[in-house]
Length: 130
Image (cartoon, rainbow, N blue to C red):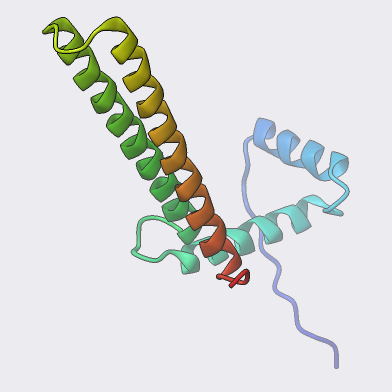
């Protein structure tokens, strides 16, 4: 005896039905609208099960972490430049010193970014280079 199947019927507005049908016809990875729906539901369930804390998926958390790290780096650079500007306005540093300090701030920011990239690469590869 063959595998028993359950038939499922759903109502759609005509535009949604047309969109789904068009996608299924134009996308070589699905053979029918039914397959599109089955895959979509399965993917939705998989993503829900992947959720770490009930709010964000692991991938989303990684993206948020990268954004937070970059934001912190930018804020740090802005603070460094703000300090140089304040010192320049107070006459504590001259224009040539300002240029030198600006270059130092940029070099330091570049070094921090390089370190961040190397750390993220090491995390991504699991420390395989060691």
